[in-house]
Amino acid sequence: MIYTTLLNIAVFQGIVLGFIFLKSSFFNSNSNKFLAYLLFTLSIILLNHVFEVEDAFTAYPFLRIISHIEWTFLLPAFLFLFIINRIDENVKRKQRSYLCFIPFFYSAALTIAQDLDRIAGFYTIPDSAIGLINVLGLIHLVLAVTFIPFLSIYCYFMIRHLKNSEERKWIIIFLTIITTLLFAFLITALAGLFFQYETSPTMNILALSTTIITHWTAYIGIYKYKLSKHKDAIDDFLNKDLAFSYSNLPILENNKSEEIKESITADNIYFQKLELLCKEQHIYTDSTLDREKVAEKLGISPGYVSQIVNTITGDNFANYINNYRVEAVKEMISNSEYENYNLLTMGLESGFTSKTTFYKAFKKVTGQTPNEYKNTNK
Image (tube, one colour):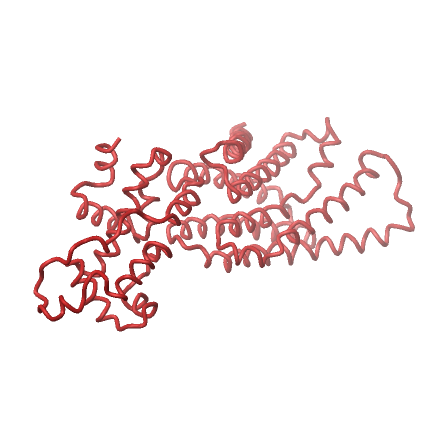
């Protein structure tokens, strides 16, 4: 059957992709391991659906114990942990991550306790406990209709802490796809529970839609944005002092008056502070950096920032900052540890806002594109 074949392919792909994220040194990171767990969870959900379609529970009734566990509780939990492990450490520490798993463990304990009676026959729940079981079941239902929507929506608030705009864009798409499927699943399950709605056709569509997540994650993760430790490694590299510095350059001839040249030299205190901001605080990695932000840090006017930079370097402020960014990329290219790293990722993490601005600035400084420079410096 074509339908179950597609589901089985997605199950296999999800498991393989999950292990790649966990075991490969190229992809392994604190954030990606939760993406791997999310893919494993999706694979379990799809596999249970395949068992349902193929009527495997008749021949193997004990499989129902696994099937009855609400694995969907794990999806928003792993998605949330995947996101917060990509944001600022201070924000991450404020989140009580362990709370994400309470609904799942409660649900699993309740369903397993009931199935050990109904399916395994290990014991018999007395009639006197039926009332308590019903109350616990009601709590389970309340958790489903509150926890899943709440944590899914809360993830959107966490995304705003992501620094990289390209990363934020695809994670929003990823989150939206999963959230839409979760809400559709929840609405379908509630309709079946309260209105005796036949859920099988809708669940079949949702299961097929879930396979798209696995395929899309494989494409985005491996072939496009590379959900790897590139970003963390590049961030670590950029936190090191660069050998490049404008303070060693001579004052270039320009149209400024002799008086300005004499008063603004390479040992100008504000220029020295600017150099320190670039070399030690790495302000150039901020893609929104402008004269106003630098002026505020130095306690001078934006116009004076431009005057200092132009007089000492013979260049404008934007090119001055871009030179630091280009130099950061050049040093990474020259470092054998970054030989297989994505050049665009290097550029974006160094402060460039897009591929176009990165390539244009790099060629202006070096006379070559990043790829050409890399090939000639192997």
